[in-house]
Length: 138
Image (cartoon, rainbow, N blue to C red; front, side):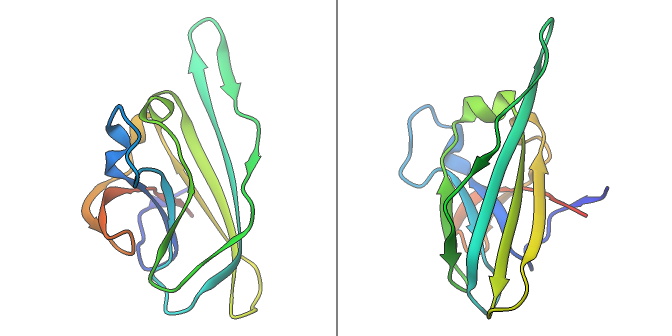
């Protein structure tokens, strides 16, 4: 399965300040909408796992966020994670949304421990600040 970073379609970005030891007011995971129309009925499911020597693989319980909307050209924070969580976890997200009352669209994203495969950008589209963009699947 090919993993790509595409900022022409809705994508997930993580503010760069997540690496700080204190919670910054802007840190967190954002759903970015670079499209010319609003996203509605947005449904994000979050999961992940980590492995520990002698313990094996531990998977997180599925975590469903309340539905929300993302205006065209904007970004909405949907959760807050710590750098320690990213260091330990392989994370994945499934995003479902509608455009103009059309059919439900699905996008999947995932990243390795320590956001190793999430490239850093000085100015992330819609986020209006530095961050890492999570690769999409497929």
